[in-house]
Image (cartoon, rainbow, N blue to C red; front, side, top):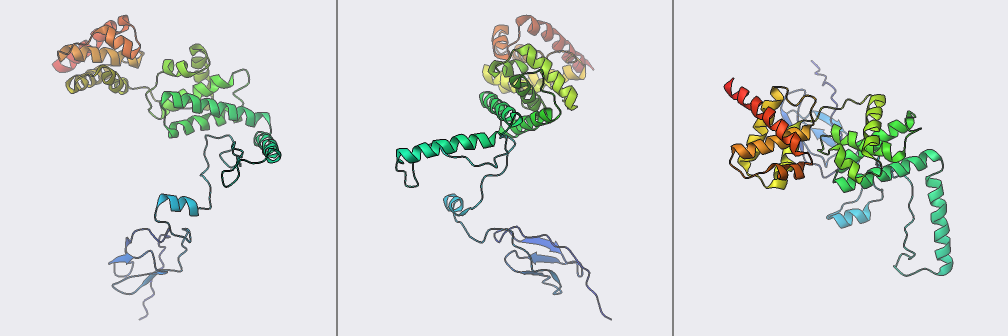
Length: 320
């Protein structure tokens, strides 16, 4: 009786340096030691050839350190949403030096300057590309000032591209839309930044940012999750040098307030600030309302009002 082996599809090896993988043989169900540096993959128990003539998609050279890898690599940086041309264009360096670092002649310097001018014109050939280049530059500038990491910057860049494609910019400033999408990106990625903090580094007024933010989110149909007040606790207690007990107590207070719906319709920073103040009182730590108000950028009146609400919710949860 001829036993016909079943066909299998084995994973393709990415490079010769990848680690050995384990796979079950479809015939004998034994574990197969899959060596990446061979052209075939054979079951060590029954001898079934699982894969042959595999394609090695890695480079043909080897590198033993980062410097050697960078020197041998023949490809550029990956594409990115942070540049208007996604990083696919060629940049001409600003230094007027040759390969050996020696200054070039005045004639070549003039030629290089002309090449830079034409290169810049080709990179931004129409108003849309110029608009996108300016907006992405603003997003990168504000994100750097706010300490926002690269994934969130790319999220904001993608949102701005969508707004530009759907024609949401006429009648609104480039800086306003750029600031709005950056704030929306921080909300989407869970990066704790208030709209007042974003307004400090922006070139537009806070009122325009709020209006543009609501408009962009509505037109792009972006589902922004509500901000959890507990996300602001870490920043406040870090600025005030609070103890671990106070930090834990503040989180418990916010959880109780959230469970009782105290946070509904109220500014999350005010809830977090009042919870930190209340936690300091419960733990015997000397924290004044002025200290919390200065760090959290909320008024003393807000802290006093939310302070009572948060404590009442916590006491009800304890009684229940």
